[in-house]
Image (cartoon, rainbow, N blue to C red):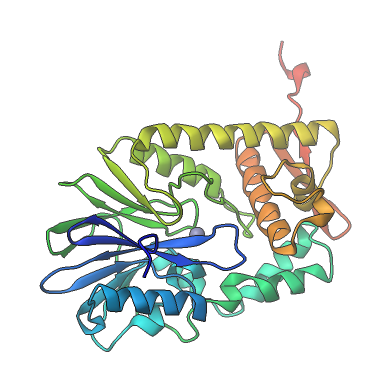
Length: 335
Ligand SMILES: [Zn+2]
């Protein structure tokens, strides 16, 4: 197996690069802590052959006995939780958080998502196609998993690693990182990434995930971290600088959304997404792959909901579609 697939970070800590074919994320980082008693896998890759075969080879190469191995999942997305069913034995503890488990196990989830996406202007006929090709639909565990729930402040211990659970809602409602205070290592899942920015999006329009995300970033920036071990791409040495960059990125996005609504209102979340700048190689919005339009619209909606919570945007209806206006400051009320 190539050096690129398994990277040794410490004598007992490895990063395994699980490929994500035809996905802009390219790969998921799965971390493996080896110990004389039980081992721990942090995040797994998707429930698909291309991920499974690389994971199984890496486990064999590292002589990991799955009967002596537990799994920690940072959040509900298929590229993190996908393989838990395959990797679990009768004795495996699969650590997870309640808010994400509730969504993963929610009956009628995709019908609900379909309804919300349609209300926000996603074109009829494309919603079903997007849901059909959504990784959450295709590559999640097939059967319900018996999770061991953890919450903020809980501690789990593997070998020399005393890992504290740090709730970091934003990327998902229950997203949970692991912090090792002696090494000052922070397993960040998709909360903090290098090279790319975590997707902050929503299909529930009565919440404010971007507001949650900012709070979670602020919380982590007060912690003493020497190395961030993210769910995708490269490790991060300067956690605070990266946090500042992520906050700046979203501040610019918020300005962009306000500007789009200033030029012409009202617009649906789908229309706002089509006018935002995206770091993709397609020539125009029409040429975007459907799945990228989907994530872009969810991201636009998260930014709109943040502005709405700040009182800068208000919503209305245009036929069956929810539309947004830039809220003008009422100068006449100022004496
Ligand atoms: Zn994710």
